[in-house]
Length: 139
Image (cartoon, rainbow, N blue to C red; front, side, top):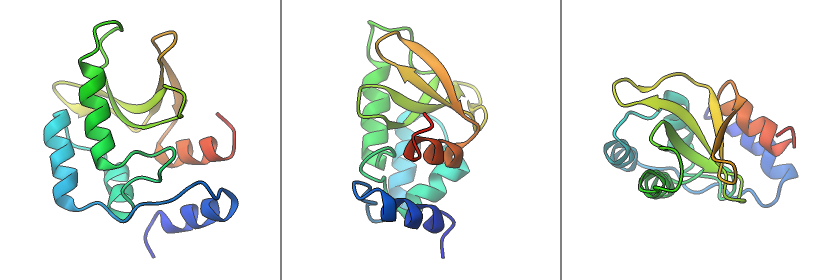
């Protein structure tokens, strides 16, 4: 059994809209890391190697690349290259890890970028906590 299986087994029993994709390949993960310019955190890599996104909260490797590259080109917001986005709430807000150009991902904390107010709001201590809070309506 994989590390994320128990959580997603529980979630898919109670949330029928969660549809995990087949696992990402190591090459797909390397493609993301090259595109965004930093190594993905271990927990996100592990999740992507078990399922390449869940078609709701967690993006696929392709969506991670597209979202980060697209948002970094926007000039109507404060710079968005300080977060590595990996998911969204479906309303235009995105979840990401804090990053720096020199050291990559700084820690496991997860922030939400609110597109309406261009603000960054702390949401969880780590990826697992974010997933639980999100799907159990605590965010």
